[in-house]
Image 1 (tube, one colour):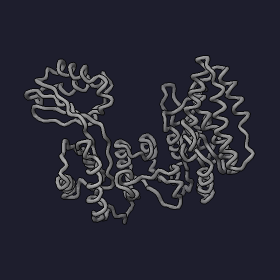
Image 2 (cartoon, helix red, strand yellow; image 1 turned 30 degrees about the horizontal axis):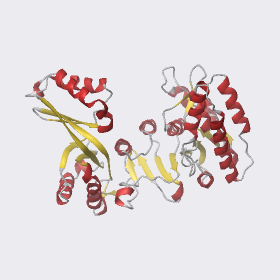
Image 3 (cartoon, one colour; image 1 turned 90 degrees about the horizontal axis):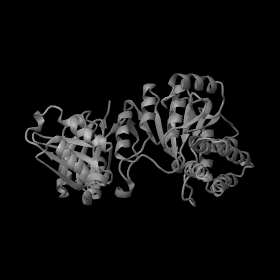
Image 4 (cartoon, helix red, strand yellow; image 1 turned 120 degrees about the vertical axis):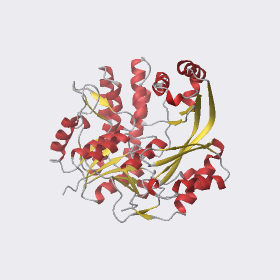
Length: 447
């Protein structure tokens, strides 16, 4: 049985020596933790921006013929401060000198940004006494920017199965022409997921400095419980509503090989954290509602037209208009004569009048109107759809608190119940739902 554990450390976990030391303790605590994947340092306690942003600024200033040297020295200072606090003699002078040369040679912004992870991997590997393996030797892209899974999995497996222990920089890989390409922000997790998949790892761990996966927002309910067990599908739902677990792409990659995911905090490293699997392990008890989360600042666009439910192509034309303006339709609520779409207010408001006029014209509407100041709350849990009375309980809780429900939407997979409330009622609604549906709920046998 494969016992390899791949551990990914976020930018916050690499931001200060106190967390890096804890990360090293984690890696040395179990022989199965053989591979660490690291991000570039995020903002430290005295910094305005993280290293990746500094590197992008350096590249932009150089190409704009502006003074980039001061920013490069800020990067050096950031790393030197970490090295000093770690108490090592590691030097990044050669790395900084090489960055200057690569800038002058016309290296891309992607290459520059990738050096944040590369340098951090060197520092962490030196502190552990391990080797650093460049992600450019392990992660490969196709010409269209998608992952070359066959080459990535076979190459990474061959190299790493013959490596005892190593630190790998996240966030980037190699294009067919040999140039460096970065993932979108958060892509260090994707690197870790690809490494874990290539090794068919026993576990993929994600370590943050302080962030854990709570069952509700700590800023609202005070001291919420940690979500101990989630399914892959529940984790994706949480990502959508704003509780970040790991990237959807990482979940999809690891799900194919049934590699479990755990999420931990270095500030509470002895805690078991959150386990994400395809099915909840046998014997685990959970309440039907697993997590409650939400987001503010939405609007509902109401479109009225007689018998629109009988009109072929109405939805296609509607979504075509929103697509033209790059507006995501978060939720759609339909009736016989009305169709309503929930959109993010800050994005929609930029061209609100223009969009509404085009919708009325293209769809030949009888009328169009908008409701603003909406918050959406998601109650998430795999067992909710098959537990009698769960949704009724949510409505009763809000009614008791005299909170008006402005919209209701249930996913077809019955993983969530979406409720819209006034922005002013958002905090009270979350508190009431968490208290009744999680704290006071009776756990059920899942299997």
